[in-house]
Length: 117
Image (cartoon, rainbow, N blue to C red; front, side):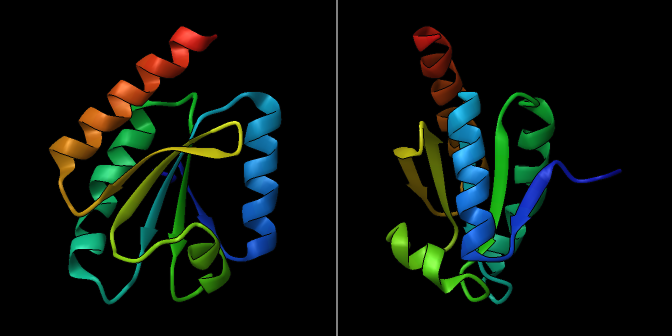
């Protein structure tokens, strides 16, 4: 099955994805990860499942070692970090590998986004 999580491979692609999502009014969930970080890698399958559950959202994955500029710009200090974004800005930030909490925060984010539509 094809992944619904889009891998960001450069600062340019990050800007394109965020600009496009902002223009479409599409909420974004970003997983900042690193190949060497076991908790980050462990969250990949959970993140994939969430992406399948919330088809109307954009799910991005950013490897902090491959795209340092984006990690730096978004002030990422630990992995995994999940950013919930709307209209190009950060709405919420969750640090750590906690599948239940991540799902709960994304659920809450979705509800709040729907209220504003």
